Length: 102
Image 1 (cartoon, one colour):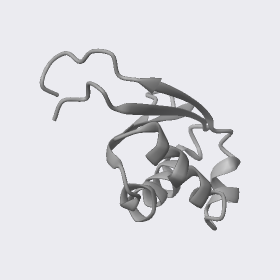
Image 2 (image 1 turned 90 degrees about the vertical axis):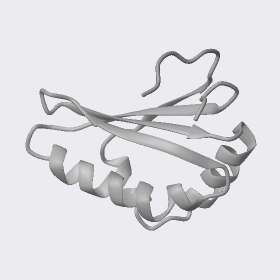
Image 3 (image 1 turned 45 degrees about the vertical axis):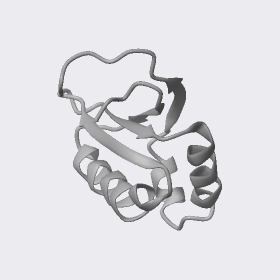
């Protein structure tokens, strides 16, 4: 799959070494059960920091509009209050160029 021309959202989350595993499970469940089922969702990766101090969720969407529509639905999702305690900070990107096959 070529990522060029897709819309990317990268969200950083704060964790502690003690709660990182719980955060991985909560965020991973949210992505698997809700986000990944939204129209336009293509693929995502959830990364954990080696020091236990954070997570990064990297998601590819077909378009910005698809992401925005999913974001509106997400405001009503019951998991949102729990996820907010990890201080999510998101940025939006457009893929300009990809490298490699991974």
